[in-house]
Image (cartoon, rainbow, N blue to C red):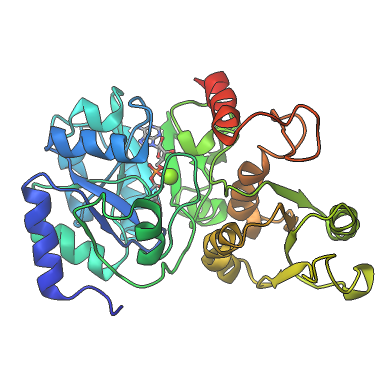
Length: 364
Ligand code: TXA
Ligand code: MG
């Protein structure tokens, strides 16, 4: 499908003004949008996503200079970041203004704000006008992998939405970097498209990665199990990974591997049912890897594998956001995170829903 036309964008804006729910592309992932001042549309977003009501939504708008319309206090550092990185994959957490209803922020006094860098998103937001904005979480069910194409959104929600605007595949592929403020210091609550070093340069070093991102219930993306495919996923360095592939293969399991180099020699030619271990060669370069990550996870989910083995990324700054998402995607499967290794443990009678509930129940 070609990217959304002007008339489709106009139609989407009209639907949103009437309280509709429309999925739209951004440079990071697709968002599920509701006009912030429509309580019924905002309520529908939570319902469709099956997202707990106290988990706040990000508010998207077109014009960075309107930041003080949506936030009631804007520290100097926030203005600097907005100037340097908007439109772009950066979300700023600031005290909400009276233009942002409490329902949008899950009852909190702060709001996540972002100007997305995508021509379709910007055209849509401009069409809505300067006094309107879109509350939009990623367009996936709670805890699942974010969508990076319009097809992913349709796959996830069928015709539950009023409209899906197609803007082609997302150029960043991972969710925005979320930054809050503690006094003079900017705190990264979720690593993403913009790296710590880039923020540090603009803020004279006054930025840190939150130690608490892991535990904070306010940031659902920070729950231990999130961004997760349905297929149990294990994250391992190359050597143990291929040993594990062999071990699972020998048990008759269907295994998919995402990594950098195939090691044919370490594997039997074929699965007992004549299926080879499926290998997806991932890009060496982190930007391209990020762009392909979620689409690859979804592709493997559709392939009904018993296990997905992912080669651990390097521990360098450029890979921080990717490593973060992979860790969360694997936390259901790895020991120490309520692991239920399907088909491998005697206690594996729990269903997928049970697992989710256990994990989310613990974190609130
Ligand atoms: O790239 C993105 O950020 C995408 C696109 C669509 O913009 N959106 C996205 O939204 O990832 P969502 O809802 O899937 O994740 C937003 C994150 C959540 O973890 C949420 O808790 C956090 O932002 N957030 C939003 N408002 C917040 C607030 N006031 N305080 C702390 N965290 C907040
Ligand atoms: Mg999300």
